[in-house]
Image (cartoon, rainbow, N blue to C red; front, side, top):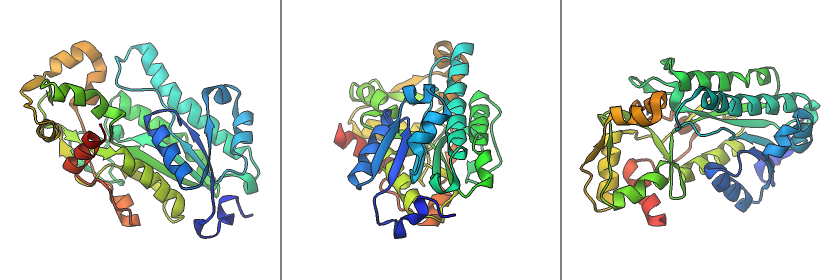
Length: 303
């Protein structure tokens, strides 16, 4: 039976797109872009989620696309309470969305389910394309594995699933640059730890464009690394941001200090990943900001 999404011939018509996490940094920009392209965007908010999967089924009924961006911040001290919140905010929402999709007749289901994930699943040693099996064994990697496993019930349906493992998101009004730019402009910037750790980043414009690209290309499915094709290190990122701010970057944040502030969560800052977006490139996506210099300049120009 033909689903709602397949009825859009050549994807030329407006789509109905439902989004969780639509009020966050990435969600705001994505909603703005999709709306500017003429799509109807429906936000699924926390009160909706609290009403259960039947309520969500009504919201996504006959939607062409479901985009799941929900998840509480991970850069915080990992108390047992915070760990439960980090895990539950991802698993509970994703489970509910999947149940809501499965609760609909086939003809009323979305044909595309895009779910956010994270490059934190990968180890800090190897270079990772989407087929990499070198996963880390820390808390974050375990969260990502469980998060992605929530989507497995959709394997036996006609719903196309795209899992997007997002790298360090960059933008003037959110992500790492919002916090670091004022420090660097004041001459207080510096590298984190040794600076040799991987820094796989992506400008929010490319996140929004790549999501839109996936909605328009029905052959794209599976896992996608959402990172710029030219990954770098924390040290090179630091030098680039300092140079573009016309300020020195003499300071260094030692690992011991981060562990004192963040405890176990310091690993998220001290051990980055080297990630390559092979699947996106193979599908024909062209990045607006493929390297750290262009991404940093774009953010500073906006600020």
